[in-house]
Length: 449
Ligand SMILES: Cc1ncc(COP(=O)(O)O)c(C=O)c1O
Image (cartoon, rainbow, N blue to C red; front, side, top):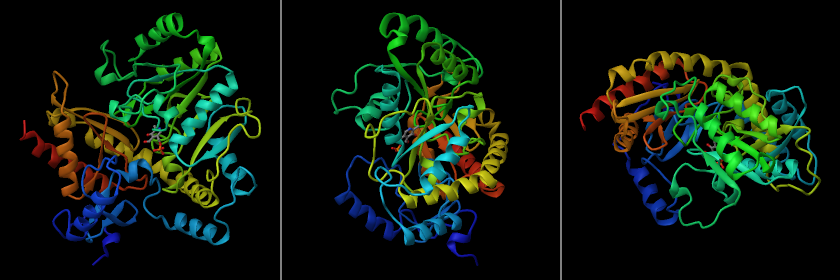
């Protein structure tokens, strides 16, 4: 019999949560900040590939990957070995004040993944938020302008600068007072709910008109705008892809006015959509690209990658103690090897397979309003009525919870969307299991309406 971590699909051996999990939940309730947002009581102990084992020996199939982080699966032996080797040699030195070889090595590799003929420069951070925070500063520094434009529904992080861009849920902002000034938000091209009845290819033309005809004329002269920042596929906002033409037009507008075109690839990047970056599908060349999450398979690392002519800030203008820690860089180098050699291609192949498998869901289930995304970044929007598109947050939450009780880990995104963001190594058996399980959950949820 295979050990729990060798199974390919879930094996549940206790009621959920099990007795050990319950003990941890009690401790957690006593000591942990209540700001965390746990949807169901998974208490993780070990992980391997796409399988996570809890403290009671239950094995789950992980289609959440620690919020799209464990790109190479849990504890990939090559990543573990790179971490162990590096930890035995040098754990910390601080790249702000000293040099070590893996910094330019990883920077060079990351820079090569970003499109555009110009060479790139890289600043390493500890998180996605910190990459965004640094990108705000870099855009202001490079342009000597201070205004920024972002999109409704976007999530860029929770520090005061990044939070000023974030416009996903008012809970993120409520109670925290005044944020950064000089930021305007415009609608995101959300094809399923397009106010003008456009398709997934054409949604957003009116938003661009609003930007050029209203924002630039009535609020911010474009010569005062430092940057426009966009997630090529909105993550927390509900796994909503922006049409190609929209990203291309945004780039044109940015170029025309000397505005930094910043893409937030924190959730959508690192091979998840079948290319290094989701923005690659639109053939664009951003000025600044922010990444984190999947780049080091779970070790805390983010990066700001920018055109060389943009990242010209002076020594001392920006720094960090931990960012680009040698152990995280070793994990990232091993992660890039794996993504490049097999997992990016697998994300593409398994994404196509899953989309083929889910294609009929809007016909087969009256609560499935939309299935969208790219590669292994898939959003399933749950509605009460396909005609009115009434959002069914309660049903979405029920489905996420039901899936957990069937051994499948998924997370919500936006108000009423289920996100699938598995490790990039899943195989067909695991994709089929996830699809079958969600179908069972939809059938059960449909009985509730
Ligand atoms: C698109 C995007 N940007 C930024 C962030 C913030 O990253 P972190 O949580 O690593 O600070 C997230 C996190 O979910 C994200 O999805």
